[in-house]
Image (cartoon, rainbow, N blue to C red; front, side, top):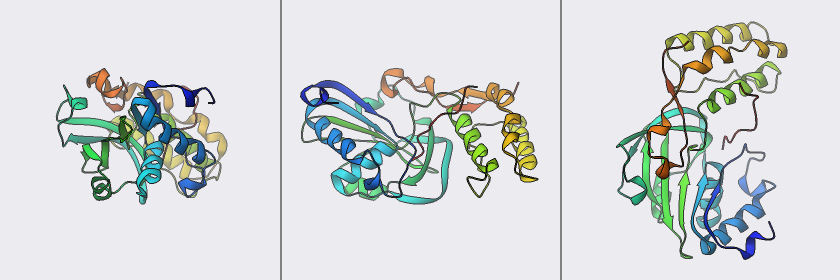
Length: 250
């Protein structure tokens, strides 16, 4: 990254990653990420911070600490546009946005810190918010995941099911909200019943990914690509894989 510090960019996008430490300040990349945020204020026209990156930047800049949720906020949620902004041009008043996180930022603290909330969900809280930085850059924040592909939540769910079957987590994970129709839900519940009857790591090979994937509908690209980065999320359609990777559950 040495060349970056002497460069100016029109835009910068920093997505999240799965947490490794209980405290953000203890993450191995904390020093580099906060240096990047300080640099971006003066050397970008705009910067996007998604999920864990958003949590880290507001903590570093204003001491706004995220709060742990009682359970993982996981799925696609209705988010309402709550403030006018040029980024919202052409957007419908209600959007469907994927979220996957164990933590949440308090809306009151964001408002007190000068952040402008653009979209929020009654179920998932703050979604998108912005602030014009003193260095001149427009910082755009997402608690959700506009970068997710149509099947990302399903792959993340399969990953967590695999962790349960291997004994790496105590409880069987809940499926993503707002993604499955009745037929797909029946498949998911059927596999859960099998898994609960006896943990076996080899059972993950029978996870009904191929049957569930056609039930995912790309609803996110209905929003203007220029405004939301051309990202996607899953929705529901009548039911008819890619290897799991590291996902960004903040």
